[in-house]
Amino acid sequence: MKTSPKTLRTLALAAVATGVIVGGVVAQTQPLPAIQWDVRRLDNLDRNVRRLERAITQRNNQGVPVLVESDPELVALQGRVAIMDQRLRDMEQTVRRVNADLERLTFELDGAGGDNSALRTRLVDAEERIAALEAAKEAAEAAAREAAEFAARSPTGDAVTDLAAARALLTSDPARGRAALELVASTWADTPSGREAMWRIGDIIRAGGDQAGAVQQYAQALQGWPTEGWAGEVTLKLARGLEATNRDPQACAALGEYDRRYAASSTPALRDIAARTRVQANCR
Image 1 (cartoon, rainbow, N blue to C red):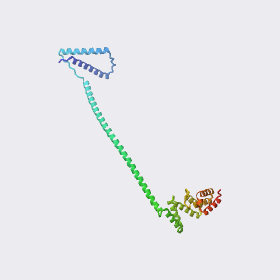
Image 2: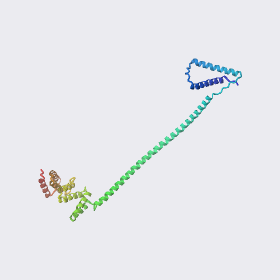
Image 3: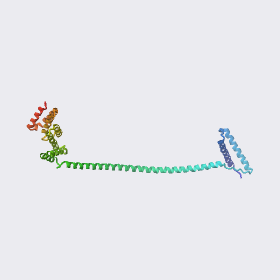
């Protein structure tokens, strides 16, 4: 069988490649110095390849077949390259699937993030509404308790009526009458009836010989200097109590308030008490 020159060139190059591979195997067991390729060496190699081609051509022309067997290591190398190429293609497909899955998961996560934001907003709104309802409930319960306590403290639900009942009770049962006045003073503290109950308690304390305790009750009743008809008389009681407990400067100050606020509308008897107290306290 004759072989064409092109085929002979290919076979020659394959033989040279086989020689290179064999040389590489030998190099693994016995290191060789690196070949310095230059133009002269390349020319020599090209001439040798051509001589090999001519020799193969002559043998073909003489009818001697030339058999070229593949190098087993080259065949094995080609098989491994094919396997690696297949694995590479498989890996590319796997990467494509992974990228597709990642894109899908990213889309789903974005949607889930939006849903979570909406749920979070609804949850916060619900918590605020629950807190408002709980606050309203607590306020209602506190108001109900206060109303119940107030009803327990106030027999009639009216400050004037409660005070009148307490004063009437003083004549028949002084102890219970004082307790009733104290209840009026605590229940209706910011009302004229509550302030009157305070200074009447002061009268009871003063009658028992406790001038300092009486002064405290009178001072509480006169906070803000009320304009009720009893205010001038109670101011003089405060001044006399301060003088009796050796607090003359404070007594003179109370008498000064009496002169500015209540003296003009007071009775002559009260103005006379004020004059005597001023002398006793050494007021100027």
